[in-house]
Length: 84
Image (cartoon, rainbow, N blue to C red):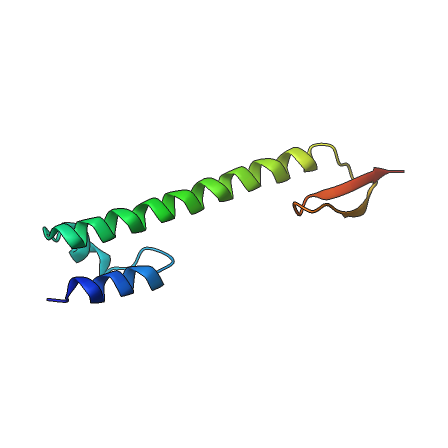
């Protein structure tokens, strides 16, 4: 059995779900559960940010057409389009 500190470090370095996390999800130690919930919240936040970004990109692309030229990119990373 890993220590809570080892589990915390492993979760901090994990960017996506891995098989070894199944054991952590069922671990009853309070410290492990706290670390697990923190990791899950971080993943939820990443998913939310990605969905928001994809919605913005879809919105931007909804104004484009085949004959549209890209004029640049704004500070948020969105494409600025010009029509012919």
